[in-house]
View 1: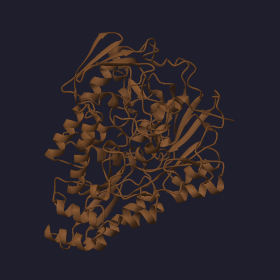
View 2 (view 1 turned 90 degrees about the vertical axis):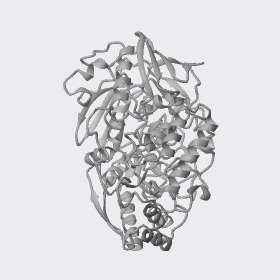
View 3 (view 1 turned 180 degrees about the horizontal axis):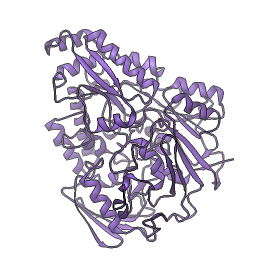
View 4 (view 1 turned 30 degrees about the vertical axis):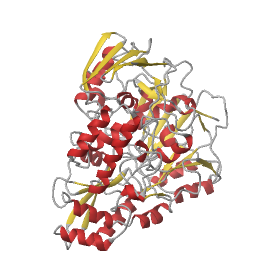
Length: 593
């Protein structure tokens, strides 16, 4: 039995371990990835952690000229530090994103277009440390949020004690009442029964409320990763009354217990939050408010940052960052190396020709990954893979671990594989996509060209608008191909294993149905021992790259520019700050005049 309370240690990094400061930079980028702490902004910080959110670039095996993941001012090799060590109350933080909310219901979608703006309005049961609380860059210690303490009674039973006096916002129909255990039960019951979080909460058997401040959660089986799951930055708690009002959670106003209160939402323009005067943490937040502006055009976002109208902008490439460094030398450039590919060509594996692994392997061999990394990312990116190596080991996947289908560009061998599968002259297929950035659109076109030139595969591109694309892809309402993603909220071992790859999961967008992967991802859920869990993750990765269930695509390093007036953050904004999914971290940020 173990107990954790403020200032609790209960350390759970995204992979259940605490990583060294040095390793963190090379590991945690890639989740719309990996950490609950946040992710892409602008698109969020381009690509690295993007998944299903705003995209950016892809990575290469070559290390960037700057230290991986470090923040760089004016092109120098200097880690960004706040210009003021004393928080200054007041001011408004303004960031842009490429998309906007399809609606306001956090239970129905994991889209960054929604969770970026609403994050600061909500609280979770537990969270990971905010930037100024972290002991080092790899510190993702759990902290109390609405739960002031918790107890792991046994591997299948968790008990949470709510923070005394935490209130919902002073907005009808709740009007500032105290958060109680029934609210949490209603939220968990909704998440586990329907919507976008269902796979994450599927191990829950029963939620009970012994009293107004206590929640007991029993699992159907040992679930060692439950606290990690709760700490994901999109697992918001809401008052039960909102489910009964007209429009439910989809309607405004958004009501939470977070550091900021909903002010306004204007489609096609912005989402605005104002300081919560009754927030349960004393003297917070520092800001008077924040704005998330919906700016789909990358050049408009960049122009706004250059003009001082925006405090952060995510970028699609090193070239874009270099241009801003030239015109705004006072701005801070940050770069982060991905731990996996957020985006990659997805195939409907249930139907020909993609149900034949020889077709998938041949297509992988026909992808000139090194050329893509050089042409689009200036050599600053990775060749690409699906499973983040940080959940399995302390260094990137080796060439041997990536297997024969990713390591080389071999059109001749690719042609032999397709011929053996009965597609000597290729075939026709459609690829649906949403271009999160111009760089992403270029990468899709390069993939299209490789398939036609080397295999005779004619990929008809079908661009979509964001909301329709996201909902259609995540509902798996497509045939042929899609430029797909592992959902951007993926931050934990369970997200990348069970949610993204188990055939029973509604977030298994790549149509993976493999009995061995199903068994392994179930085992991972119950594995409390870190080394056992890492070994199991390695096995899943080996199957993934051998069968080529996902055509690993190059991923560029994440790039972003930060205004010098923004304080209280630490590199990288992708996971440590507020550019998208980690948006509650804005609670401890401030701006200087």
